[in-house]
Image (cartoon, rainbow over all chains, first blue to last red; front, side):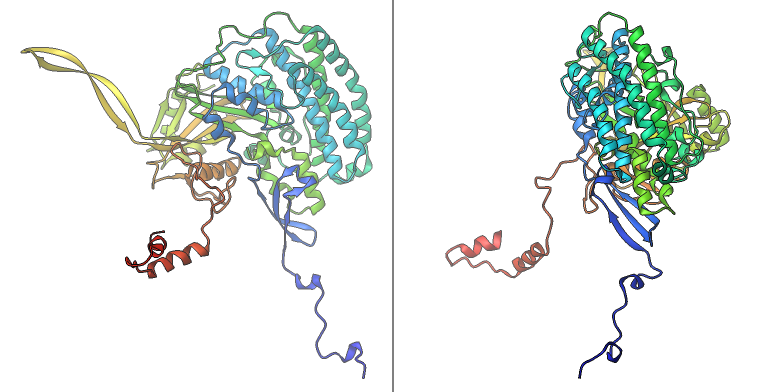
Amino acid sequence: MTATLHELHEAPPRAMTSRLEGELLEVSLGPQHPSTHGVFRMNVALDGEIVRKLKPVFGYLHRNHEQIAESTSYLGSMPYTDRLDYFCSMTNNWAYALSVEKLAGIEVPERAEYLRVILAELTRLQNHVSLLGFLLSDMGAWGTPLMYAFREREKILGLLESLSGSRMMCDYMRFGGCRVDAGDDWISHAKKVVADFPRFLGEFEKLILENEIVINRTQEVGKLSAELAINAGLTGPILRASGVNYDLRKIDGYGFYPRFKFRVPLGDHGDCYDRLMMRALEMRESLNILKQAFDQLPGGPIMNPKVKIRAFKPPAGEAYGRIEGPKGELGFYLISDGAATPYRYRVRPPSFINLTVLEDMCLGHTVADVMVILGSIDIVMGEVDR
Amino acid sequence: MVSPEQIKARAETAVPGAKIEIIANGSPANQPSLLIDREHARTVVQFLRDDPALQLDFCSNVTGVDWLDRTATTKVKVKTLVDGEEKEIEQAQVETLPGYLEAVYHLYSMALKHGPVIVRIRTADRANAVHLPSLTPLYRSAEFQEREIYDLYGIRFDGHPDLRRILMWDEFVDHPMRKDYVPPDDFEYEPTPHDEVLARAKEHYTVRPSSDGAETLTAQA
């Protein structure tokens, strides 16, 4: 006798989907995933494809940067700040140098301030352009946009390398100035890179920002209100995409930024498309600043000769210095007790704090949108985990 | 920009009973801070946030600082009899200052574009009374940063919605940013059930002095 299906005594096992009916499915996204921009994990509770809960998990790259800095000299931390946000070592250097200069009351020569502005804006350009490439890659546009972005980024990294000796770990700035001077050939080369950049940018904007798929995937996704953005301490392009006019280059006027004419782009909707757009518009403004900086660049020394950067002992006290990094407000909080090592050294990492509202942005969206939202925040795990 | 003295006066009239102390800053940065007592910290900071003249709506940086027990030597002039003559002699007086943990908040105003106003709250000591009121109900930006302080310094923030370790792993027991922290020799060491079994087994050993000595080695291990 052969058993046919309807003669079976036991009911067949229920399908996988029906077993989870009415329950949330918990998924661990990451830590090893190309879309998580490093070793970053999210515990997500899913209802079908919709995100109902999201808890980020940090610490895979934690090496207690702050404790290491508290056991070394002030100068010794300078190369280590490169490793925080390894895309933007120049701005990390500047934020740290600025805080130490505040702590000890150090003047910076004019040419050094101009060089700092030039290098910070070049860093902003290459950070934003690679972010756009990564974001497209996260959305599934494998290869082409990222390679275009990296081709241009490599030209800027070449400039950084010829000046500082390293593509990404520049270690260029010192308290009271910069390490090496930029020669005339470097300036003319940099001018050429900056002059060629808008052509690429126009092409890239056409490729990305007018693309129908990109518009469908990013508009009305991950919306964030201005009130929540301020309360959650968001800074940088994400904050301005929500329509809050807060750019430290204008507010604090550090460096020589008040000498340059530039606009602060603001978004209307606070969604992912606005955040993309912020990066594209900021690059245009950075190019403006760079052109003005090359025109105004004065001669003169690049280091304040009074500063003893070795055996450096600032007076007892504390200082908090901050700059507008490509990812947001990058701050260093230093407490000195008069010794050669800082008593307290604290990094205010913009991408760590910008992740505070990741859950709020993702709720109600699909898993695929989570990757777009995470990509639009622009995180680097070297800075998040420290 | 409102001066710290004005902020102190305004906050103390708005929040009765609050004790605010201005901590001077010796560096050229000129960033004095306000030390607020634990009981009134949240009400005072809420006043700072909602006061129309201050509007400190943006809490930028939140961090912890560990202050160990310190000895401060102050020179006091004491009148003593030296060789039958009364003289003023400088005498060093050593005073022990108890240690504490400190949470520091850098507040800015995005609406009025001023700041920073630096707020400090201190715990009673470093051992048991390490509770501070959480400011996360006022500023979401403090959420992860207070978790980080709890993780690295061990300050318990009362009223925090989700106070867990954030950078160290959950099973970690100490607070590594404290100044007296000593890292373990072996980070990978984990007590296993095997160790408990060994410890229990050790209780059953009896030391027998007559044998070849191997038993005593086991018993003392």
